[in-house]
Image 1 (tube, rainbow, N blue to C red):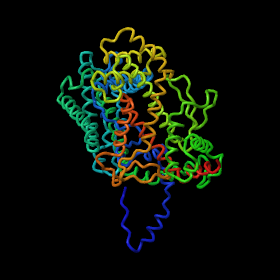
Image 2 (image 1 turned 30 degrees about the horizontal axis):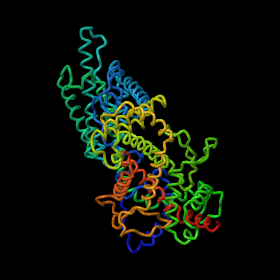
Image 3 (image 1 turned 180 degrees about the vertical axis):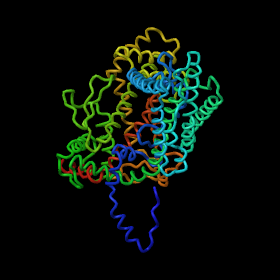
Image 4 (image 1 turned 180 degrees about the horizontal axis):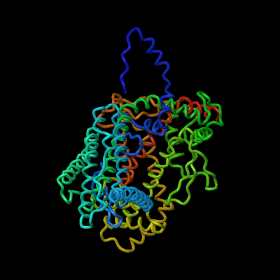
Length: 601
């Protein structure tokens, strides 16, 4: 982004006119609304973790190795995949494995066609096209770096030709001809790829460039051995020269795409996110008004936001706070909407319309193996941008209640009490049991409910055995018989733990990092998760991490140690969601409607 010239006293008026002409809504329309919302939910100290895709930054940079060759179909289907968590499916289930296999099959067919054209017909048209496409990607990464552009010569690529075999050669020379052709693909193509990779290394972050440099070293060895007329170039095992070239091209394309993604994410976190945070609330209000036909100050139109109005009315009726107190105290209105309205009536709603209702726009239909009856949740219009967050929070809380109930039964049968569930796992064995229980409850590869419950029962029994090595067969039967009831929500422990968890979510709604710096809570701001003086985003310990540490401690104290980390993250998301709703809609919609409901009562 170029820097505009500094204005002189003579053109101050022109500068003011330009500022007046700036349209924040038009500027924000360049961004995906989902991206805008994610930024608004992110504390400035956490901007470095933002990505354009919404997925976490890829930590493990791809390497050119057997794993890469197998995943992209360069190793035959008959060969076993390299042993790793990624190729084993990572517990993602049979559906994910089928999708990965289909993708691998398509990649293999595409790559095999290019390799076959090179090896059987000396046809490198597709190879040239891939190199030119790689050059284009590289130039897109560095539009202003003419020095690197000069390294990538499209003309040289167009002039590439392989050593043609002699069609009249006798059969005893066929092997020599094939060897010469194999060396030719390496000698002709690899220099272009090495140049492109060298330019890529200069653009990548330090951690990303390591694997590219490793490929350059390997490719240079292969090229040198081919130039030296070695009959067997220094190639990876079971890889032909043509396959090495095509797989290397594929690898460099992947690395270039990853570099482009990293650059875009860096630009988002350093340049765009602060601007989005500034203009985002106004933009979300504009989208809301366009979608629901609500204008500024239009609080008398009951038809525009009926679910929001009904939600606030129900909150007032069920919060247990007098209307007079709510009318006179804005902070009290904020608190009851956070706790009674958001936590009790939405996050932990357990009753609602039956299955005969038709799901409408903005409603969440819950489905889970853990419960046979799940209500529809009518999500208020002001929260409909957070339906995915709502689903995620409810899934986490539901899983945590059920898993903790099962673990509590294991503790009781083992005769050790619930102290194990109120602290960090004290031994490696208990921690492994915790992981196994979570994995069994997340296993989507099972084909029946019976098999699903059997796997969970086995994990619960394993935990009880660790807690009590002399566990008897009768005790195992007790645990096996209780698992189905817990999974269906028919166990009384479920309600007890659900109430405990609900209380922690409510308590964390009022959490502040430092009471001395606490500002009065208003409907237009919610309870800000900030500490005075920490807006530079460089504090050693971010507000989010402080929140999660405090929440984790509370969840462990209430008996949720096995799921405390996940619950702390869900609680943070829940707090951010409702606070953002106050920032965007509090002053213009939520508080006016709240007051109207109170006055009409």
